[in-house]
Image 1 (spheres, helix red, strand yellow):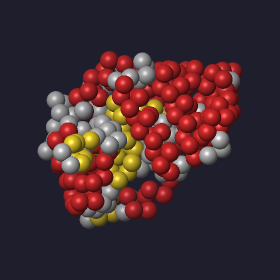
Image 2 (cartoon, helix red, strand yellow):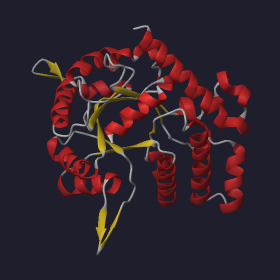
Image 3 (cartoon, helix red, strand yellow):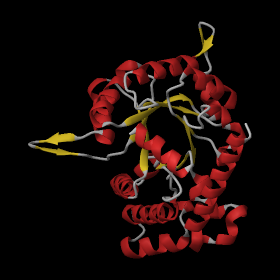
Image 4 (cartoon, helix red, strand yellow):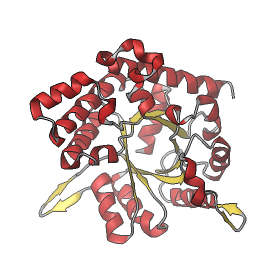
Length: 308
């Protein structure tokens, strides 16, 4: 799957991923009204609104981008109905030939880790039949359990040609409480990065590994170090836009070939119509605002890479 992601980035010239992280207050009133008219102000109604909102954004942007990243918590908050919307979103994105990164941040050990991996990236056996539950192409994984937590995911990835993005240095302000702690004089995130590179050697694509890393855009200098530590790992970079990251901050995350990183923007794209810059589109044309935000993000990153 890493080969497909690289291929689509080259084709679109857009090393970006749209984070499909819907909140009800992002969803225009006309979509909510239609969903509630059909299903009432219920969890099912909320899930329908989310699904229709996502579909509009995907329809407006799929030709510009290589990948999407739905964050499962935004769906889980609406219970089983929300998870149904998550699955519909994954399937619809795949029907548009988009690479789907399931932002699930799972992490456990043994059979529990294997069950998470099977649910999101693999297939489950039911009697004589085999089913693919959620079927994302990549999943985000928390490495706090060490190899015991990651290896079961790697086994499923090997079997199904899927991939992982391991949390290495996250974009949130308090990430340093643990991730920046020194171990034998080196920050913990650097040691985790080295481990990601080792795991990655076991699952190589043509040029990059199936095992990537998550490194926040809000820490560009750390990204510079980690790029060297993990030369064959794709880096998923959250924190662009709404969290303060800009194209000029991102150049160190990329290799000299212009590849090696994919930058996420969530509310900066999906709720673009709420920003002053795109307010002229209006809520009715929220998806067109999202498309323009994607075009602007592509231009920002492309310009930064050309001027580095």
